[in-house]
Length: 186
Image (cartoon, rainbow, N blue to C red):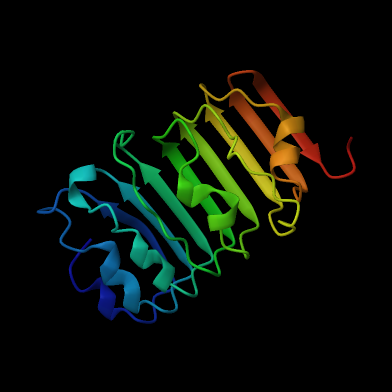
């Protein structure tokens, strides 16, 4: 990403923000803080060496951001990335997620109240249990889990973990080749 992207203050969609080596990627996520009108952002993590532990903290400053996609091209299982999600985020898509368990920043009490949809596709996730049941989370509506060959899920348990769900789509996980559920289909 070229240095100076932060000057495009009217930018609403940015796809292809690559975090590579520090020499290939002079622009950091913190440089995007001035893009107050940015509504959609796709980040591709090519190298974990190119960012700091708290680099994703500045995402919370993107107050207009509605859709965020983070794709991992490297395994960062030993590197706990701390991500602060923007307060108005509605859709979060995690691709090739490198962790086996849900990190702290993805637990219900850390998710923005505006979040309606969570998609996780590919990666090493093997457990959706976040250890908490939040019956007051009436805002989280859609959950899609795809191509997670290590994930063993129980749709009934998912509905307990996320009681506000209206729709669940599970495709190509360890114990389900395909499963769909909509509210009212019990």
